Length: 320
Ligand SMILES: [Zn+2]
Image (cartoon, rainbow, N blue to C red):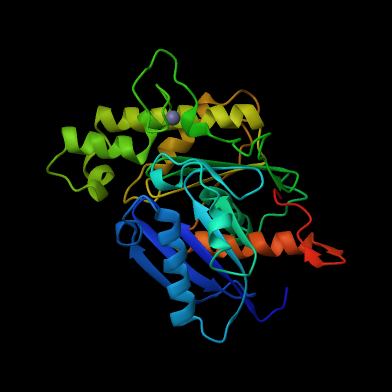
């Protein structure tokens, strides 16, 4: 990829959509943030997103060479990185081949990827982790829902269909509350940001959601919430025995979130002596542009593994 080319990253979040042009030095040359409902207003949401991207590129990226577009979504994505399989919070994307639609608007390569995979790429880069030494890396991102990504020996764990690492939808024993994914009793119902918001609305209506930990961190309901979070995360720790665990997401970055208490509880539930005794825990940097930088890193990785063919250069593998 030419060093003066840009990757367009599109981060479709629960509330906002961020779009930006990311250069080879991973700096954002130009970006925009907009409320999701201003772009995605009908059931044709993928077409609307493509038109929004086209407008951004035409209006703000004139003269820039665009080498690829990467769309990060809070959803399960197929292994080929073309189709959104199940998006509880993006109904118009369910089962849609996003790449096929975007290719009607753009000539450059287009990829769709689970948003937390892009975030974990950014974190690995920002934390300067050496993938030869840190062979198993687990990322847990607690936002509106629970996002989970795992890197093993330098590659993202995708599973047979691309839907590995759905920690949010692990069933909880003897629970049967409906989950937006269509199943019942999923973990996401009990430890996500969505759950925290419901607790605030029901029990602390006079406290703004951003102050829940500032005002109520000592209350049994909030202690129980943190304890449940620790149980969920230590499940991952016990499954993968990771070289390091990275925690991030909006809930983790809230004012006065009890990080030390969460860490203690994760170690308490982790198996003894290991991984409990030497578990390394890092925190994701609190940046709103992590998904955009991750988009650039994703394309850089694909191209570094690219192979030459008679038709040009193609990415060696889509699931790296
Ligand atoms: Zn679910």
